[in-house]
Image (tube, rainbow, N blue to C red):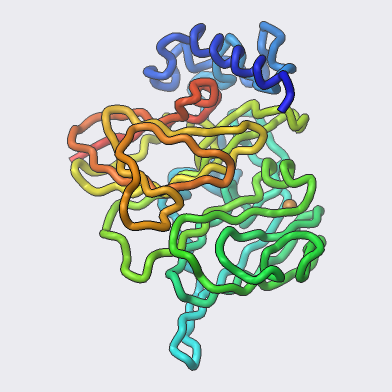
Amino acid sequence: MTSSIGRRFVLGGAVAASTGLALGTLPGRESTTARAEAPDPSGHAGHGGHGGGVSGPTFRKGSVVDHVRNGFDPTKILRDFDYGRTSTRPDGRTLREWDVFASDEDIEIAPGVSFAAWTLNSRIPGPTLRCREGELLRVNFTNGSKHPHTLHFHGIHPADMDGIPGIGRGVINPGESFTYEFDATPFGLHLFHCHVGPLAEHIARGMYGTFIVDPPQPRPPADEMVMVMHGYNTTFDGEGNQLYAVNGIPFHYMHEPVRVRRNELVRIYLVNVLEYDPINSFHIHGNFFDYYPTGTRLQPTEFTDTIVQGQGQRGICELRFPHLGQYMFHAHKTEFAELGWMGMFEVVE
Ligand SMILES: [Cu+2]
């Protein structure tokens, strides 16, 4: 890390102080709107690459991105679990297969702001692949991008299925395909991402997804959702992020709150893949949650309202909302929150 980190944290403090109650206001209000094109008038943005500055978040008033043109919608991604195709092997074991393809896509990440993304299944984040412990998994990967990529899964598997350059099949070049095959173990909440260098750029461009291995005995029924925390380095300088998000589009769940039912169990599969910043965090208003780090144990380790994750860390949050109304959730790194990583739960009967 360079000394610019210190500058960025100082800058973050200035942002929080200057915008005051921004964390408690809804989109469309003065404090959460600004111009997408506006540079930080303080001139500090270049030091850390964070472009919000004292003018606050860089968004035009009242407009949202074109989800249809993007081809994905964070409201759908939230509860979109991809169980793939299953068949039964002669030995009675379940074989589960998915098709994953890489492609280069221009995505509107903020109103009028296009990002040259490298995607998995044409979305950011990539698909949420879900299976059960003990199954045999096959991931048929096709590289339709102009760049070489791999799929590297977190989990327990042989080296030649690890999806890194120089081992096993190694790099999958443009136009090539490869099938990764491994066992679904251990149960828990995992992730997958490209592992080709420059690694930070391949990840930051959008090449990641969630990988859920359910325990042999399913978890109790719940309103389940995935939240992948990430950012956008729109300048591609590798110096930080100008925008932050969960599930692809900054501020999306401020425009479309996550609707949940009062007293129903809510289970959030929370993953941090944020590149260029050392930590990310999740905080919920007016409530506490049980936290299961990596989801590999069935007993929570903590009852809290804030959790911090480094890159690659993930965990399951379980909670019920006893009261009706709207409750914010956001990074408790307020700089990230004001640059897009904030949303709302709306609790209804
Ligand atoms: Cu890649």
